Image (cartoon, rainbow, N blue to C red; front, top):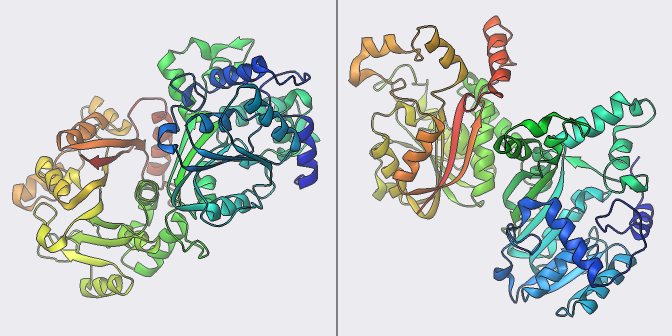
Length: 543
């Protein structure tokens, strides 16, 4: 059972977060406040590049004269930075103690004025569309109704306003090893404590017996919480300390790993989720579909054409999630080589102006292997749901016919093309200013291909069809790429890389077979070998 509002208020009022392992009397002088800043910077090296807390992840200069809301301000360390930057900052906290300490910080350090008041983020006392920027550092996971708080923050943000937040990562080494395994299982705490009680006891306030409520979230759960927002991006961060002290601080085997590897693991199993998002429009009372819901609905609408592709739903989800993260809803997008239209229809259901470009699926003339039955019915069905499907060539798209797009998607396409340079130049010409391209392609150096090559076999499966059909008839993979090659090609084509992913793309659980079990074993091993997973995804922006 989750703690009540009153109990949470009482606990945090008695235990203000001062970044100390001991409960000491709070003496709010200059040394006290400087020491809090020093400890924060030490414990979150990923968040700043100078002596200002959060200077690496927040552009303070851009907030001059902007209205900023800082929630759960604690001792006011972040509120102070906004005030120094010239923002019109309002700082709130659930506890009177925190507001008094923060007011003392502003007085002692002679900081510019800020509106500091007691308030609950789950019921904000502000008008709609008031603020340009919101910070929610380490507080949303302590609230009984996190979704209600985010709905309130969305309400008070102006259209186009931005929110940044830090929450705890459910899939972190800290949670699964140091709390669940170490405390819950090895010390048998789970015999008399629930998982929620473990989270409360061994996170913030651990030396005071634990706090009233702490929640951990996965990246998927965070994206679902932020559905009202657009341009949502979730990144994992941490110090290398959990890696260094693995499996125990008295047996620190992790510290023997190379520094680059420890930093890599910190970005994979770190404790902090850093979330950035934006308010896009006024229709926030309409519940929007999640990526999963949009995909499932698209597959249902497009059945039976979509049925042979259900094993690929995992990579469709990856691509659409990246679109949802990097491209605002309402943007005009084009999926090149869209197949039966699963991605553009899913995007349309999520609120994008989506179109598809396809050649092989719509006609037996080019390739019976990819052609579908009743292509006219497919095009009519997509049109009825607001998706235009163009019958055309991805290498020679008629830019005068299609116009320009805010984003272009190409999944499992570039490996089929003899001239990737020409293709990427076409993509570049289709994009408007600062347009985004999302490219997904199979990995040349995937683990099973490495094994085939070591055994003297070709890493390519389709050599027979290449031999039989020749240059003009072959529609298989002309060339697959490593992650570095894919990145370089986009850079050579005048794109700036925004995101790179190395991932798996097929659902191996749907069909039980010896081959699938072997693939699952190889997939597990590939996590330990750099760049040996199934596919690469690049998100790049037009220069």
